[in-house]
Length: 304
Image 1 (cartoon, rainbow, N blue to C red):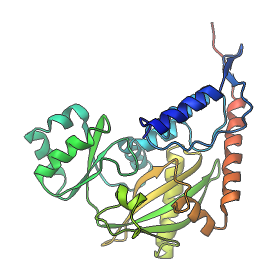
Image 2: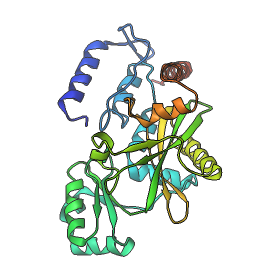
Image 3: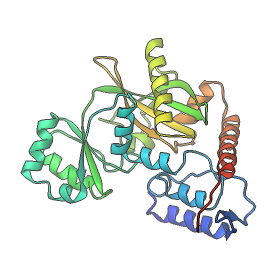
Image 4: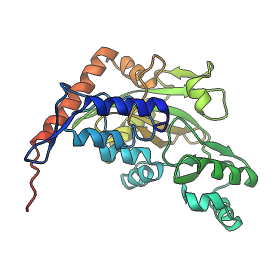
C-alpha cells in the first residue's frame, strides 16, 4: 500500500529526479532526461490516479491507464456503476460510508441482510490484493468485518457470494485494444485472498482456461467493452467470476497495474497469445509514448 515506507521512498526518489519547470503556456515540463515512466507502485497512491496525476502535471509519458481510468477502476463501486451502464454484467453491491460502517447499527445490518443472503463478501472500496476482504456467514461476523474493512478505506461494500470460477483476461492497446486468451486461477483457500495470491504454493494458473469457445468469445468481448467504458489505456487485467451453475460471467474488477512477476497472470496470458515479455514491454512503452504525443497535441489556453 502507498502508506508504507517502500512506496514513500519511491515517491521521494521520483520527486528528487523530476525537476518541474513552468513555461509561458502553463504546461509543466521535465528537466530530467527521461523518455517514459513505467509505474510499479501498487495500491493507494500508485494505481488510483495519484501518481498518474503527478506525471500528467510533469508532462511525462507513462505506461498504463490515465488519471480518470485508474481512479474509477480502483473504486469498486464507481467501476461497477460505469460497467453496469455499459451493459457489462457485474455482481450487485451495497456501499457503506465509513461513518456508518463504524457504527453498524442493527437497522443498518438488517437492511444488508434483506438485500443479500449469507454468505456475503465485505470489501474496502479502494484497496487491492484482497486486503481487508472478508467472507461472512453470520451477523456477528458481518459487524466485525465491516468495522475491519473500514480501517482501510473511507467506504466499504457488501456483495453477495457467487459460487464461481475465477477467470482472467489481459487487455493491451490504446485506440484499438486487443484481448488475450483466457486464464483461470484455482486455489485451495475459501476465496482468492492475500495468502492465495502471494504465498500459497497450491494456487494454480491454468492457461488457456477450460471454457467453451462461446464463453471465451463472450468474456473477451466483455473485457474490451469494459476497457473502453472505463477509458483504459495501455493495459489492464480483467477479472471475471464464471458462475458454476449457469456458466454466466460477471466482471469482478479491472486491475490497471497488474503484476509482472514470474508468476503473474498478465504477462503469462500474453505469452500464451504470442507476445513474449520483451515485446510486451516494448508495446506498452509505445502506447505510453503514443498517448504522450496525443496529449502534447492538445491546446491548453486560458483567457485572462
